[in-house]
Length: 224
Image (cartoon, one colour):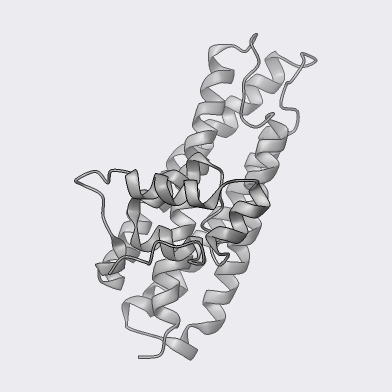
C-alpha cells in the first residue's frame, strides 16, 4: 500500500512507496536517502519549499511503466539489483570521472571556476565506496539473503548507514568544488561532460542509498 500522502510522512516512506516521489525530491534537492527520516514538512521548511506544492507534484508525477516498487520485491532480489546496477555502475564510471577531473584541473589550471582538488576528492571517494561496497557484498548482503533479521543484522546495518552519511557529505563537497555542478561559459567539452557525469553519479548514488536505507535495511531490521 502506498504511503499516506501527507506532510507528516517521512521522505523515506514517500520515496519507498511512491516511486515518482524520488524524481520530485531530486528535482528540489530534498535528501530522501541519508536524511530520509525527516517528515516532508520538516524538510520543506528547512529548504524553504512549500510542502503542499511538493505533495501536488508527487501526485501529478507519472510513473513510467518499467518503474519498480522494490517494497514488494524479495530481499535477495533487491540485493542482487543493488550489486548488479549500482555497485557495478560505480566501479564502471568513477575511474573515468577521476581521469576527466585530472585533465580539467591540469589543462585549465588558473582559470576561473576550475575545480581545484576535485580529482583527489573523487579518488578518495572511490576508495571509500569500494571498501563500503565490499563489506556489503561480503558480509551484510549474504546475511540478508540467508534471512537474517533484527538483532542479527543490527550492527552491520548501523555501520553501513553511518557510512552512507559520509557519502552524503562527499556529494556535498563535490557540489562545493564544482560551483553546484554548473560549468562556466568557457568550459570545454570534457569539463561539461565531467559535470554531467557527476550529476548522474549523484542521482544514482542517492537512489542507491535510498534503496538500502529505506527498503533493504529497514526490512532486515524488523524482527521476523
